[in-house]
Image 1 (spheres, rainbow, N blue to C red):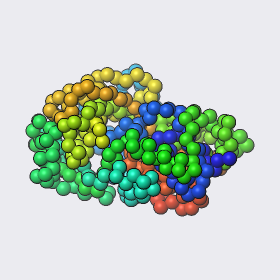
Image 2 (image 1 turned 135 degrees about the vertical axis):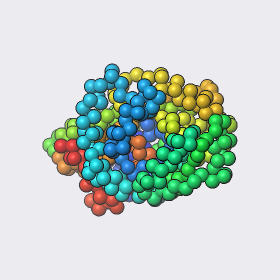
Image 3 (image 1 turned 90 degrees about the vertical axis):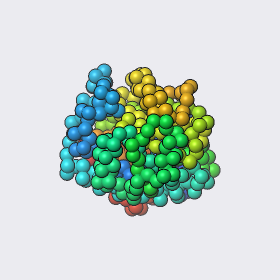
Image 4 (image 1 turned 180 degrees about the horizontal axis):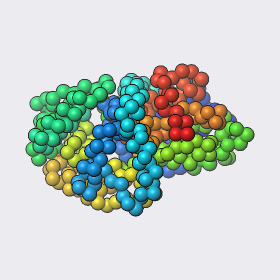
Length: 406
């Protein structure tokens, strides 16, 4: 019998599995996709400790019209997927009210303050400290006007443990080495970091899980509740953790919980990293809402917030626009490009759901991390390990309880 079965083998599920297995629990992780297609292994690689302000904010509401995809922005709410985002929109607007936003910022800030220390511990625990690079990141603008507005906004923002400084001469040289277009201004964030190889991270987490006595089962887990206890069909487990990303909502519903997740679809293109130096940290072109990350053997450009269904086909125009951005900036990444689209699991208040079910005593949950799944994976794993051990976690989970949605 496994002490705990984890539904979802993305970065949150695997990190939680490692934490629990290394604490002495018998762990089985169920992952239905064998090809690592999830957002966990295709994100920007950025450990974004500076993103203290949830995207459910007054500023996001005010700027939404100007950020529409149809006028060149990164936000798209396709009419064909309106049945998915129409119910989401009023909840998002409610969470964006000033009072709710301030509460959300305080809750997210507390979680983010523990994110980097937790990642250091996890990287050591899986014997892969080299994958964690604490080199900060750069943000650049192409015009003096957008630079003045953007830099002022970041300096006024709450950025937690990350600090903002003018880009150094060396930073500007690094940008110029990979970007032929002129850059009007840039800033450096210190205190953030990135993962240098997401594929290697997945392999290291899986290896650490098995070495600690855990199992990885590549099949879909069917959840039920029998006699007030969570069960996984065909497997004898004492406790269950839902960490299935965008697929978590129907699983939570089995236990009677409402989880109003939406698929926040993102797109990226990748190319060989032959001409992109290894010492360039993640580079954000804020005018284009695009982040470019150098991985071990590739360079990736990512963007877009497309609200809709995880199962809908991709929109090729997003990839085409990314390729146009790369060409316009003269970036040092050349075709052929590989294309990807995936779904970030997002709740209306842009806070994750982390906790223990109030309805089913042996059920735990950790999902809805939106853009911050990689960032918050390690600290979420530590919280889950504390909850399973019936200990108080380092961060209060009250703001993250799924019961906030009824």
